[in-house]
Amino acid sequence: MRMSVKRNIQHPLFAISTRRWVQLLARNGGVDPGYRVRAAFITMMSLATAPVRLLFSLRYRRRIEEASLAYPPVFIIGHWRSGTTYLHEIMSQDPQFCHVSLWETMLPDSFLVLEPMKPFLANFLPETRPMDNIEVEMDGPYEDEAALAVLSPWSFFHCLYFPRNAEEQYVRSIHFQGLSICEKESWKQAYTSFIKAVAFTNPGKRLLSKNPPNTARLEMLLEMFPKAKFIFISRDPYLVYKSTKKMRQNVLDVLALQRASEADLEEQVIENYVRLLKGYLEQKTLIPAGNLVEVKYEDLVADPLAQVHRIYSALGLSIDQALSGIQAYLTKQAKYKTNVYSIDKAVVKKVNQAWGFAFDEWQYTRRGDKR
Image (cartoon, rainbow, N blue to C red):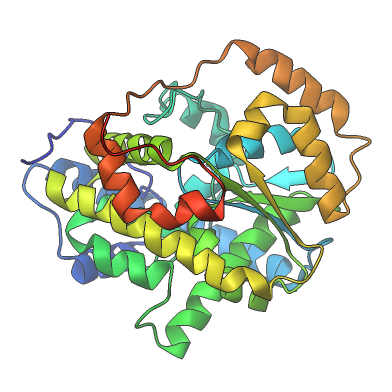
């Protein structure tokens, strides 16, 4: 069974450099029929934004590269649909932090130049995210990976844009398998430059990052930021499975440049969970004592303030200036309803067989296969 194609042409790669765009197409097998208008939009906008990228480089690149981070970043990690966005939104209310915004990920090497056009471009955004109906805001917290998709040939987002090549993109962009030393250094340089660009616009603040692919990149991140702090969030595996599958279907529908089969999608959801979280378990011992805290999504939802206090205490962060903003955000979000999923026997059996280690590791109740 093939997934349908929606006729929107807008795409997050619209500001990618033309050279990178051509390389992506060649590396990932091109564009399938039915997606060529979407690809043409990217090509047209890539050419149109070239002068802006050049101006950004001439005006800001050297200043950004010479700048230093005021503090080591704080990375929120965990599998997709585990509550990383919710935690990111909560902690972003703290004025000591700055965060990567949707605006910065769309234009990672030109956002400073195009700042005057931000209100106009905001008119073209969807009102809510396709996977969970969370409101989309141009300056709201977003995940770093979207910027890496524009800046690097290796990003998890390319699994969504080029699903026929999703396996290679996944193992190379998250686990760095098969990458040469030069390619790894190029990836590190792209990511570091982007983080420094965000910090450059927020002097004196600590970056609060949310990026699920970073869950299995701990060794690489610690090479880049040895004193970084990490918050890992887990969630009931059955709900993660259902929510991740829905997310992948919805995102592929509006962003893919190639067709994807339901069977391939299913296999990727199952396998990527295992590889991502086992990668985390293998690497988390590399994090220095006092720089990692783990939290459950269920505990965060039940008592957000208590969990935030625990996180700040564990990481040695000051919470005094954060409380009023966090409380205001929680009050505003009180009426938000999360998606409700039915967990049938087929899902229980599949998750128990493939993800059994997660129930033991993070102490979730395993349901019986026969009910």
